[in-house]
Amino acid sequence: MRSSVFVATALMFGCGDSAIDPAAFDAEGALDTADAGEVDSDGGTDDTATDETFVAAWYTLEADVVVADGAGSTTDAAVELVAVDAELAVDERPCSLDLSSLAVAPSPTDAENAGLLAWWTVGVPGGDDCVPDGVPATLGFGIGQLDVEVRARLGTVDLEDEAEDLYGAWLSADDGATVFPFGYTTAPADVSDVALASGAYALRPLLLLALPAPE
Image 1 (cartoon, rainbow, N blue to C red):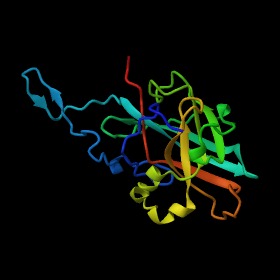
Image 2 (tube, helix red, strand yellow):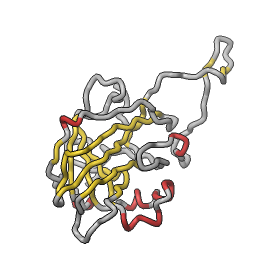
Image 3 (cartoon, one colour):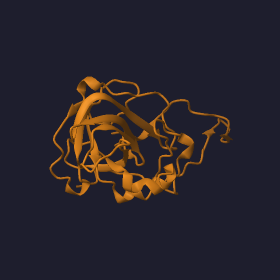
Image 4 (cartoon, helix red, strand yellow):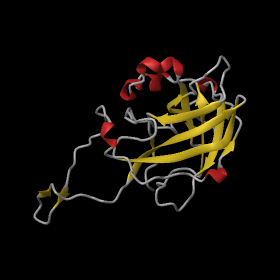
């Protein structure tokens, strides 16, 4: 189930298995990324002026989790919030979320189209400099079927030929009322014929969620 809670860009992450490369973003005309510069006191434009303050406009998630006996686990997990500004630059500050709040949870009931196989929730600390305003206090994320929107963008990470071996990465910012396909999930090398084999899974982003406009 999806709703306007999730406003995804038609943008693409060009990321490796463990890092995001800001230079690989492709706006596809969705955003004007031209640098307008700053207006000087004479009314001209100072092309050399830069704003060193990062202001997030989008966010997404990156995670490494473990599945044991067909179910999610909190062992050896890592979850990171990724913030992106209006010009598609990624905030380079690491923003690892507190794993003491990480929990295995039931999959959202209204997410049949996601084919969810495992689901987690994690708390987002308030007052942390790396967390943009507007990110909810709790995020849900999980492993499910590979969404067609994500599949269409696998070429940006050179995985188009491996689509059949990938799962989908799904995210919820409203306590599971809606879920959004934010990326793909790599599986263990020794995947068996079970629905979700035991081992380590890497959830990597290809789509962004818009932060709410400041009030």
